[in-house]
Image (tube, rainbow, N blue to C red):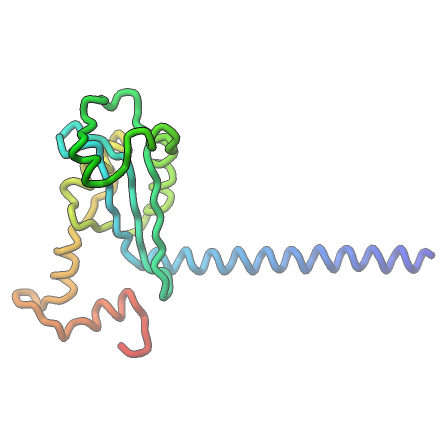
Length: 183
């Protein structure tokens, strides 16, 4: 009987050790992919209540490469009380297709801001419209946020030799961001 109890106790210990090892493997894999993601730029895009200087962000979208996958995340943003309802533009709603009512159940601006900073900290952030997206990022954070790079400029730098476009420089992007065998 004592031998059976001892054997059962050892089995429970073995199971616990194996479970912990599996947890560590998952953590290491998560950390590996997180480090890999830090090497890739994050593309950011906002939808807003209007294009006016007082407009406020209503949705944020992020995308980045992770290995050979494209990761896409987005969140609707519930407006802050200090964001004027007068800055909701029905014409903007027609463009982005997000009804005002959908924002009532969205995450708070503070929660979205926290999530965003956790996601982009230490990473290069680019946009196709940085002058607008920077304004809405700063508004979301209630302070100047990380600098958003201009996607067109990033592409120009990647594919130019200083003055002229040089498509032969594709290997720069491939080596830096794709890490593929064919480059």
